[in-house]
Every structure is written in structure tokens, then in C-alpha cells.
Length: 333
Image (tube, rainbow, N blue to C red; front, top):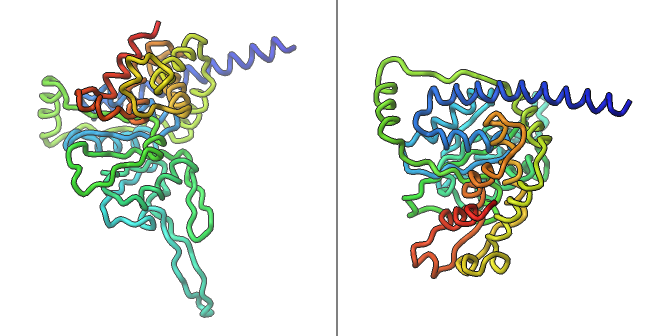
């Protein structure tokens, strides 16, 4: 009897996995019809959402970061909103506020008016331009999936994801994100310049009178079902050990002294959890039902780079976190 139940469960999971693979492939193809020359960025953004997390997009202006978020909202069937972060933006501008209303019988009462955070996909544009007070209000929502206004709890829609953008060049008049908030982002996705062939395609296909439009490939409910599937995917012991090796060796006092002497502070257990989920999501995105060590190596930099910092002397010598994490991944078996 038990064997029959187990076989039935495995068959059902296999069918759901096959359906998820088809939906994910269709979503990726639809996104790449609109976003050119950023296949790695698209992959990492999809991995972030399939893992149920939030992403920080870092890149100079004009690299289609906003376009990517808009496209993801359409393709994944999510209700999306955009908030331009500025120094004068207040927490109530994001969360919402209570307004005093007077009824026909002249009775007065407060009514909560939802802010733009009550959406399934929030684009926080130039997040580091907002004050620490506003950033902390967003932090609670990202971690707890609800907001508190006037002592009352208001749950956010599900799924709920934040994709924030940050300009790495303009630092004047900005408020650097605190480590606690950076740790809430599953990945830091660096958006670079496209290659010549991709930029040529951009020129030809985006300056005419007809442009490609994104089409919905899956629904919000199907996305949540896929997120649950990601958490059920089996993961081998060798992959678990590889994740532990990378994360723990990036902490001062735990890894190779020749490497850790350059690290001021390293990633915590949340980083290992994020890497575990991300490797499963990347495997599914690649058409596989089990992650490999290659997935760990591919995602270690975007998952860890914003969760650790170098010493002053290491920065003075020109070392970077990305290079250091890459060095650690090269040591994996």
C-alpha cells in the first residue's frame, strides 16, 4: 500500500515538474523576445522570482533595468507597480496611510488607503536615494510580507516580490543600503553593457514603428506552484557540501587564511539558504530536476557578493568581492 502511494506521489510530482518546465521555458523565451543581450541577467532575475525572493539590479542608466521588470510582470502574470525613490519619499508614500472620513450621519472614522507596495511585483527604482526611514519601512515588508500602519497589520498580496535598482556611479545624495536590508535581497544582479551583436539588434528592433511586446506565459498562481515545486526538488549531498564549503570559507577565521585575511565580515546562514534555493531554481530553469555543483559555482557570486565585505587593505590593493568568491568556487570538486 505504502509503495503504491509513493509511486503515485512521484508520478504526480513528475507531471507537475514537466508542466513547470514547459511554462518556464515559454516565459524565458517571451522575455528574451523583448530584452536583448542580457541572457545572464534574465536568468538570474527568473531564478530570484522562482526562488520566491527579492532582487537588487545594479547597473548604469539605459541598460533596460526598468524594461526588464515591466516585462517580468507581464510574462509572469503579476500585478506590477513602480516607485521612483527620492530623498523626500516618506514611508506612507509606499505603505499607505489612514485617512479620516465623515459618513452621511456625520460619524467620523479612519480608513486605510493602500500604498503602491500592495502589489505582486514592486519595482523600487534607485532605492538608495530614499532615506533610511523609508528603506526600513520597505525592509519589514520584504521580510515579513505585511506592513503595520497605526498599529494595524495589513497583509501584502501573494506572491510578493521586490526588484530594486541601484545606480553604482551616482553616490552623491544617496543613502547606502544597510547590511540588514542588503541581506534581504536573494541576489545582487549586475547589469552590464550588451555585446556588439546584441546592441546592433537593439538598434534595429527598438527604433522602428513596430516593436516586440511581451506576452503572458504563466499566471501568478502557476508561479506560486512552481515556487513550491522548487522547494521540493531533491538536492544531492555533494551539492549541499559545496554550498557549505563556499559560504563557510567566505567567513573570517573559518576558511583558508590566505583568503579570509582579506574579508572584513562574511555571509551568514541566510546566504546558504538563498544559495540552496537558487541552485534548485536554476536547475529547473535549465530543464533539470536536480541541481549540480555547476549551479552553485554559477550563482555563488550574485548570492554572496552583497553579503560580505573586504578589509580596507584588500580594497586598497584592488581586490573585489566577486573575484574572491570566484576563487572560492574554483576550489569546489
